[in-house]
Amino acid sequence: MKRSRRLLPVCQLKEQAERAEARKLADLQRELEQARRQQQELQGYLQEYFQTIQSQQQQVTQASQLGLYQAFISRLQAAIGRQEELVRQRQSAVQAQSRKWVEANARRKSMEQLVERARQEEALEESRREQKSQDDRPYRGGNPF
Image (cartoon, rainbow, N blue to C red):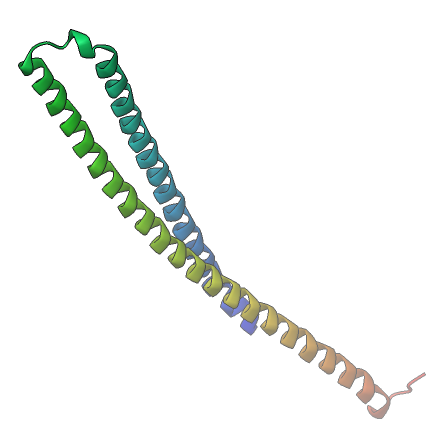
């Protein structure tokens, strides 16, 4: 069996590995975008809540009501902080997976180049055999014409 044919299964494995890494990267990027959207929503809620409080500021007369507003704002700010941390974690995961995909891509390309070199060498060897065969014909004892 020719070397290029023996290398094809390895090349296919490298392609599968690269596709798997690309799928993981795409999944992590979707998770990152979702985390960012949730972070923006939380920040939007906080802004809306501040605007609501400012518009109703004169209606707030009881300290207990003001305490409830402050407690809700604190919980919302804590949720925003947790979401910011989640976004940072997702960004790190995307960066790490991106590096893994780049490495898998490089391995696949290297294997494809190796298979292509093997094919070229085989073609060159076949060409040499044919040339030698043609060069040897006149010497085989038969009539060259």
